[in-house]
Image 1 (cartoon, rainbow, N blue to C red):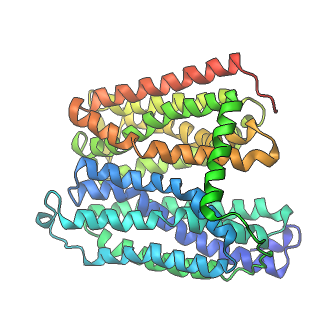
Image 2 (cartoon, one colour):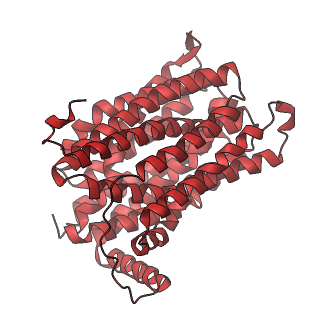
Length: 431
């Protein structure tokens, strides 16, 4: 790579970039496998609906620990050691899957293997609030301000491409052997440990950790008080979070139900699930730069209407597939017209939600307050994750697929109404 052309990268940045890309390649493979873990749990392990909701929940509720782990990272002097330990302890349990049996009869209801599977992935998800922020800290320290965005963007693109290729390959492997997850998850866990060790070798010059008189509990309580004050005083931001509450129910309540629907109602094979997932990822790559320009020009409440409506349309067309089952089989891919339309909707949702979720909150406060506003957003997401997935499964068990999808769509449209009302009635004091 002729990376010297990017503002004459120095040796430190070049070395950092190679380590960063190495991590991104392995991280892309792991993320692809994780996108399939819920479907693996249903289709190969015969997991129950409530168990699969917990599997999804565990990826969200760990966000509630962000405040605690952020304080821990800030107070730790030996961050390289923290990163390696966290990576090792959260990735190592993936190796346990190599001992899972390959006989479907052993995966009866409430099998010990179901609970072990849930434990393995809950442990892995605990890496999110520790490993990723620490890696970002290392990268911001090693890259110059001018090159950070460019180099981070290249590495992210590499990760996305690897993720799509891996997703496709794993779909084929699982169609050939439904228990191939017993070797590729352990392999990826081992590679994940190596990738974190590699990226921990980035040259990191820690700043002096200031003496902190506040205890960690006192600091966390102080953070919560600040969150409450912001929500009380900034009504426009309160509306934004209220709308996200209804969006969160619509999205999270149907996430696990849709995976169950793909298996029980449509009997999709792994390759088909991978095909639809890859299709929306390709759309997102195309649309992100376009919407990236738009979000800076309009109020985030108006912008966020786009992903809310797109998600409602996605759920609608997924639900209609059961009533319009016409499909074509091409190269072992089951192509439903309604699922193709829903995938297009999801592409719009994914590209716009990525922007709204990550930077929408920063619009409502000053530059100095951006971290506080995003902390509220993260905590609220984790809070929604404790209830919405279980509520969705309960609705499905009680009323079936159609009513669950209908409730989610209504919730999303209510979120749209709140955003539209707030935009017309409440001004943002800071622009």
